[in-house]
Length: 584
Ligand SMILES: Nc1ncnc2c1ncn2[C@@H]1O[C@H](COP(=O)(O)OP(=O)(O)OP(=O)(O)O)[C@@H](O)[C@H]1O
Image 1 (cartoon, rainbow, N blue to C red):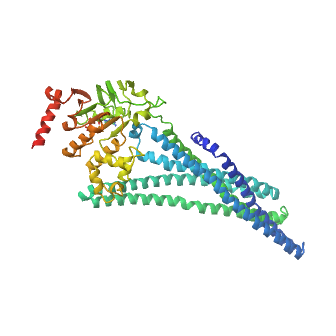
Image 2: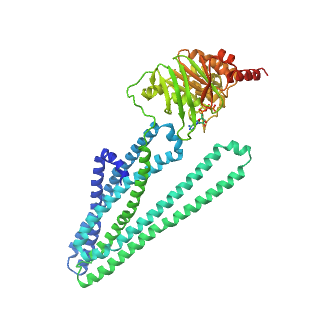
Image 3: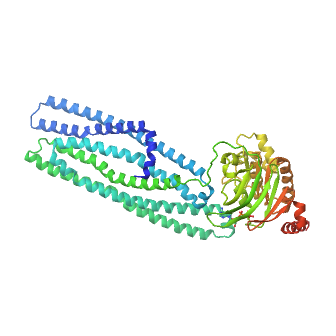
């Protein structure tokens, strides 16, 4: 129960609803328990009439009163049972909502390395499946426990006052039922988890084959995927059958144990009536109803125990993520406006998960408004530099200064707010093109969106689509070409008008002519912004104020276009090669 303590704050938040719910539960059960007494009393009236103890008139009026009370008690119990679900189960839904939001909010502040080391499926599971299991504790478990306690206490008082020995015999099989249900519920839960896992494997497999349908069709491997699907499907079927097998035990077992209890009541009760220990025949009927009313609550003791165990395990998994501290901490609580000076002083950085030393002793200084181009072979550490400026990771050695202040001392929100980042692989959401661009600036006007798209040289493509800027992208929408995606992604960054712009090889899928036009627009737009362009092409770099060339995490050349051409190194070689390719 330690992990589940996390929910106490929510129970406190909804305490009034919960208390009302508990009171309603108690009232509902008290009224439900009028039934056996009234039935017993009615049978006694019939028996008294048969033995001539009462007159026909008294018989009729007493029976009528009993029947009216029976109907009244059933109606009140029914209304209160409805209200019981409306209060306690609703509280569990509120708690489920709050917990989901809490987890999601926490996910948002966790660092990139957390996402690298945990699978997306796991993150999704904890926020959906696990929260669902915890809800069962916060709602149904509490409701059924209250139900059982009230029913038991009230029924026992009635039963013992009517026939103490018969009470003992009647209740004898019930603990066996409770224990049996507990083990059965555990088995059911275990098998349901196995079914869930197999279902998720099946859906992951189908999802992947649908996303990769182009590859599957072009390689003609549809029959193979079909066979694989069939195998997974067959495994799932077997697991479902295994689950049904144990589920099928549930009700027969209950019916058997209720039957045994009924038999005991009739047998022992009958004997006691004959020997005169029980005075009225109605008591036997009353007891039969008690047994039937108590069986389900007793069964739920076992069921609730297994729900609580499951909830505890789920909450433990949830807490594990909630207790994970973000590696990147915001230490400056006040906002810190950013101008855009960037300085790397002997910066080294090793990725914690792979231990790859991506940057070694890197130094450069960039004044606000200047442009830096970074070139180098693949894997040389170019993107890593941009990640460090966005503080997606913290550096190991050296110092990274923004506006002459250590990056870790800046307000994280201000820092990221001042950056416009265009990643190497453009990611667009399944939304309209307009909203994808506006992602950079939520309150942007249509004119601003169009201006950004024009500067990113993608406006003409967009207006050629039937729905223009309202064209929906993604799974159910249109698929943009690689170059179009990159340009929408550029528009998203420039609409924000940030102080620092980071372009990570984002023109690689664009032809050189369009690249030239975009770069010309960027020169105008980024006049007073600090800009870093990562590229494999000299054409993207040649106009930059500074150029650095990286090799295996080290700066091997630095300068401007002219000085690097004259120094006859990697840059000059690349320039000559790319120039001759262009001329071919
Ligand atoms: N998130 C990560 N976790 C672990 N290692 C990483 C991560 N990202 C990059 N690396 C490693 O760090 C090194 C530098 O990678 P980086 O992406 O900075 O290179 P790059 O110069 O941008 O390459 P490219 O031109 O191919 O984009 C590579 O060896 C890479 O495998």
